[in-house]
Each structure stands twice: as structure tokens, then as C-alpha cells.
Length: 203
Image (cartoon, rainbow, N blue to C red; front, side):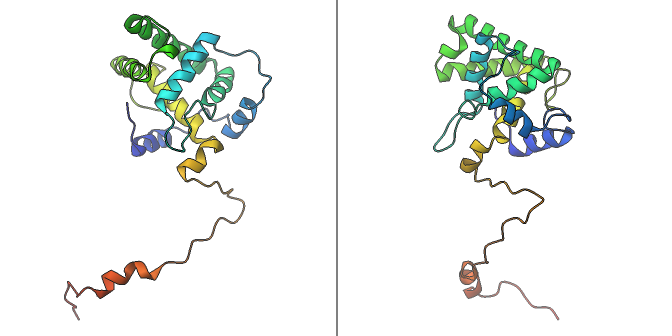
């Protein structure tokens, strides 16, 4: 289930946008933070499943918040409220996760222990890949339901300022001067400068 940083960047760059070209993540997050939101594209049970799944895709660690901690599903909920096709695929993903959970553990996904949740998502990932979908962002024609959900969780997580401090990321708007580089510490080269030459000078 792990996706390397290189593959994530490649799939992101292969798409013309983060989600859909007309949607700005900053606007989506502004809407997601509103407490009075109605007309959710998900049922209460689907939302509970998605929150639990997001927490397994990006779990908490050390000082790093989980996807659920930063409200990833709130973001996805707002996005899906604007994009019916994506919403349908996310609902199908939630329903399939629940179906696997019921078959394997006889209980809702949110009530399964973390190790069991991981096995469910691994099964779901294998099924999605067997459907013939590639690793493109948001899947191929919605067939890769696991890939769709995973990438949406990634998008929600990495565009939320709550996750940036733990990642060591600082946002600097492009219309203002950015941070200055720290002066180079020459002492880090001291050991190398003391070593004898390992090359021949050629004139």
C-alpha cells in the first residue's frame, strides 16, 4: 500500500490539477471549516468508514497528526459535493470497504482493530488494481477505487496547514519575498580540508 514520494509527485504532475482544475484547495478548506454544512454526499455510515480509512492511510505518528486529525474527510466531502462523479466513486469505495470488513470480521470497519483495518485496505487495494486501473491520479475512469480514495486523502492532508509543521514545511506566498538562506557553515568542511589530496593536479 505504500506510495513513494517520487511516484506521488509523478502522478500529481501527470494531472493538470490537484483535484479538478476549477477547484482551489484553499477555497475547499475554507468551506470545510464551516460548521454549518448540509447536503453531504455521504451517509453517516459512509462518512464513519471514510474517516477510519483515512486514519489508516495516513496514521498519526510522533508529533504528526493523522488524516482524520486534520479533517481530511471534511475536505473530501466538500470536493465531492461539487463533483458528482468523484462522489459516486468515493461512496462505492466506502461501501466496498464495509463489505470486505463485514465478510472478514463480521463488524463495521470503524470498529475493527488497526491491524485488521490495514488488512482490509490491502485487500481492497489488490481488488482495485485487478480491475485494470492504473496508478493515475484519481484512478482510470474511476475503476481504481482504492487509488482514488488514497490520492484524495493525500491531497486533503498535504494541502492542510495543520499538517505542515510536523512535515517541516513552511508556506511562503510567491508574491512576497521568501526566507533568506542561512549562512553556510564552513566548519562542516574542516575534516575534508585536513585530508590529503586523493587526486592529481593536471596542468
